[in-house]
Image 1 (cartoon, rainbow, N blue to C red):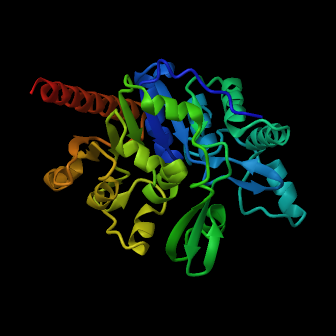
Image 2 (cartoon, rainbow, N blue to C red):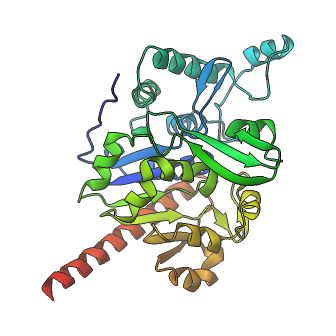
Length: 336
């Protein structure tokens, strides 16, 4: 069954997001832009099969956050969750290292049944979002199979085994995204990126290597963004040498990158026009600008709805400013 293309005529922002950190900014964007102006592209490199079901952790985190049912303490999973099935499976000697709550299971059961009937992941995700009252389009970057493989000192591990089962303890020696080069980018994403009225592409403050690289590797999206007509702007996932969430700093060190805001800017520099950093990192603005990037300092902590909305508004305004400056520059070139 083919994926159903979305109406992208009103889309102004294509937002690339991983899980918890990305979902926070997406929630902020949902508070300052209309749903039709946003297209959220989610990471599916974390997807895997467990208990015979297809699990899409990052897509679900985005969906639960926008539906207002995400667990506020963890950022993932659902609020008010119960664990009867997990407890029963564990008592029977089954695998219980990946915690699936009862309400969460309902989503996975329905997703798996729909996928087995032939529906593509994009259609299933859209239907699940609609059922949960989420009006902002959340799209997998591809309907094809894409899996993050973590090469470690203990050998290659699928992402969830490394991240959840092994608690990110093995030393990372490399990352691979199986299926990325052969995968087809979801058609509506291609259409939106080619739209001359697109305002910006926003890279959320997600783990650059585990959350955003699988998206950027799909159908060579990274190269497409380098030629995008709209500005590409990223929000730093770090303040100084500290990451907001997860093993970002550890993985950066193991892959040979200094775990700093400056290193992330350097890593993204070939595809970005602008970079948003925390006010605490303002002193390195000049160094980042040497990469050819515009820099915006803002409060990047997102512990409250107010902080999420404020940062989102700053990112949107920054993107629009870059776009206007680019337009003026292009008009100047035409008048020469």
